[in-house]
Length: 173
Image (tube, rainbow, N blue to C red; front, side, top):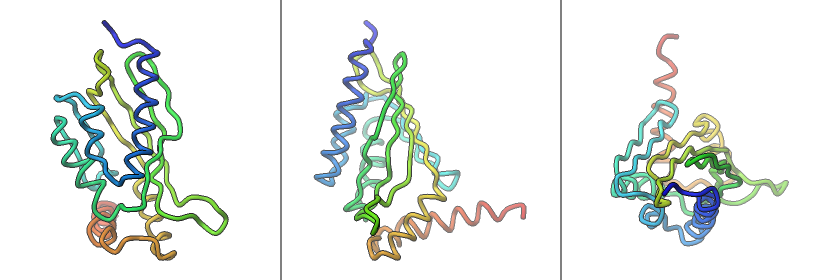
């Protein structure tokens, strides 16, 4: 039996709630077990600088919700602001939200979007994440200037990502 629109919306809401809880605990790996089918697929291209392509739940847990969400990301959250459903698809609009707030009270954040396919059992079978990596690098610069960027995150993710992005964009100049 196909997943109903009501069931699909409930899964989207459950994921929205799970992201709040994961950020509170700074533990993300459990989301893979809660929401993803064993043979699901996850893809994020990071603007062509690196490709995260996980081909099952264990790989998603090890990469996207493990390695990519743990080291240096303390104080960050990734709240899902809104979602839409259609057929067996969930489209989410979420934020890469850094720690702290600006003097004007606004968040340090950049937008992202996910396209998620949901199986009849309510588990995710495919996910594509997209976000503006250049904007994310600018956000990290802003966080560093405010004293809010983890030195570990800068060393292990920001600097190497900037180097790959610059190298990629210099070709053909």
